[in-house]
Amino acid sequence: MAHPVSIEATTETFDSLVMAPRDELVVVDFWGPGCPNCDIYAAAEPELLQELDGAPMRVVKVNAYEHEALATRFGLYGIPTFLLFRNGKLLGKMSQYYGKPYFLGVIRDHLPGGAKAQA
Image (cartoon, rainbow, N blue to C red; front, side):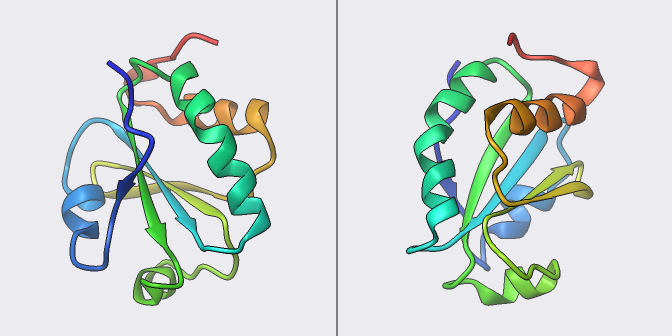
C-alpha cells in the first residue's frame, strides 16, 4: 500500500490527524509557497515515500503561512521543518531538508517497533 503524497492539515484538523493516539509515525511537513527548500523536498517526496512503502507511517503537510498558529504552537522559526510524532507525542524535529539519505535515516530511526522499510 503506497503512502499518500500529501494529507493536508489545517489548524482545525491537525489534532485529529497528528495528535490522536496511533501506533504509527506521523511526519508533519511544515512548508510554504515560494520556499526553495520546500520545493526541493516536495520534488523528492514521491520517491522518498515509495522507499518507505509499507512502513507504519503517514505524512501530513501544513502550510505554515496559512496556519501560523500551528507553527507558533511548535516554536518553528523556519521552513521546511519536519516534526515526528507517535501516539500524540513529539519524538523529534528536522529543520530543513538535508537530502534523501539523511531524511530516510531519521525516519527509519523513529518508526514504531523497530519497523524498517526497505532501503
